[in-house]
Length: 371
Image (cartoon, rainbow, N blue to C red; front, side, top):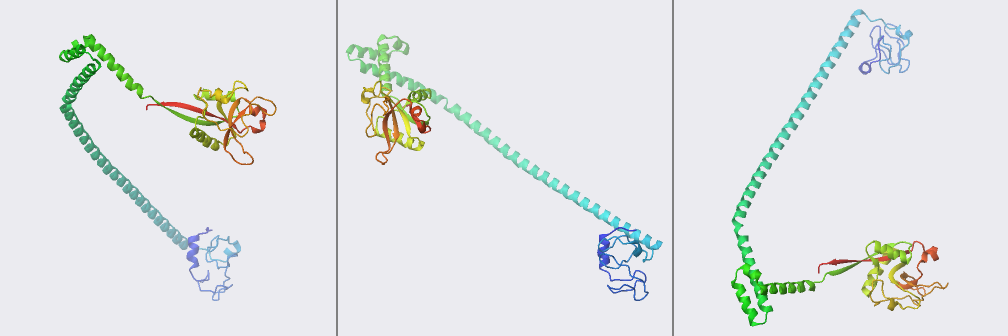
């Protein structure tokens, strides 16, 4: 018995319906051959005639019952041999075709690899050529630089000697100006004509050098370094004392405000912080002391303030003394009036826990720059 062969089925499907016994053409729906009367065995699934003794239908692969296969004539030895030879020829053709395809693929791969190697070689040669040219150019430049350096070596020495001579002359001129008496002028004239060793040993010249250094020191002191002030707004539910210590640990101090410009700058930063209460660098020693007398913790005079209406009060409604300065942002008669000064107790979060998260402090830092 054979097995289902889809390729064979396709070829069979292209042929006309024929009787499996006498090979006469029959109609698609014929049950018997009109010529020999042979019963036509049909596939139980697709209904097409069974043309040879195969275990499966060549059209849809359905297994053929034995009773239908018995209706078909058995194949002769000649037919079987012919079929085997045809099958072997087909297999050999497939093997040859597959071998040719494999060889073709091998040639293609070898061709690609050779192409890659060739490209790599060309690229390497190009890079090597450029590198060699660059090395030659660098060597030429270095050679030219060494020659120029040799030619110009003598020039700085001459300039240096000229500079020393000019410096010596300037020092002598300073000595001449600093001395008012005729005796000193004569001594200075003699110094100009003496050698460098005699000049250094002369007491009068020592005095002149000392005066020159003093003048230089005076000029240097006139260029005092500039002090740059920077600020930092930091959130934290701290007391005034803790905030002061925190700023000092950061290398600064609680901020002081001495001008409208400084107030505006700190207010802008405070607006961006989202806080409501910010500690500043001022406190009273007692509730009888005036803020202008106390001044700032840095020792600066009290030259600016911006109190909330009715402040400073020096004590809260519960009688607690308020000796510490903060700035806060609160409305007055339902109107926004910006950031204003207010005296507070040392720990406002401890007294009013509801304001936790709204308290912070302003640190000020100083940095010197060369004017």
